[in-house]
Image (cartoon, rainbow, N blue to C red; front, side, top):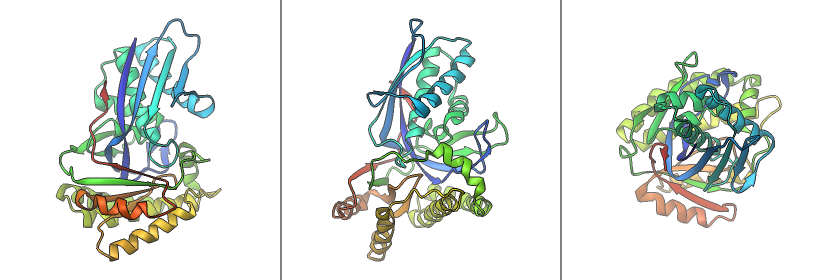
Length: 322
């Protein structure tokens, strides 16, 4: 019993940080993201009666510790649905850096969930898959869908799932240009960081702000209005990082190069470049622009010694079986 699935990473415009229910991985507020076409994970799951234990291989290396634990937990959830105990070998590859703020857990667990479900013949629709993926990684619930996606926070397991807002063709001109300033995996994972969010005195203010920004972001995507979308996504990213930095202990995902780039994009905007930043849980920066200014933005980034690598992605498709 085996299957291979491919899922794109996503960049959240209104982000998920902090949980209302840790056991079910329910978020404190809705979130909205864009699934990416050129940043993805391909995962093969093979259930084999000859295996005595699950084998988890990511980017060519067998994993132990937390990465293995989370993958096995997700396999267990799917095995429970299939009512089997057969162990599996998982082979997973990313075409971008893991654990550096490019939502590798989103694409990884979306691909794992879809591949394992297909291998087991569960016949789950994407909403059901989204609910299962959410248990492993909240942002993975969104990566099962293409284009622009909203994760409904809900109040229980049944009501917390992602659903598409607009397909990838709706605003195909939009680009996510990722400036990589560090390839290293972060020391504190997003999963652990969510648990610290409640220790921040600014968490509730950030949640309130996210609720106010959600209609703005939906409207901006519907109208394909970057000048309305941009300030909203910057405000949400900064508010999320304020929560991280004010948690106990504080989480500093930024590097000096991160702040340098934030100042650069402000300067470039003053000079006429319409690009806006957002940052996930890591030091690397996502610049959101439209296709006609993508080349100019990349050229500016290439001149900076602090930028080690640049990725560019468009709105991408839903997760799929290969």
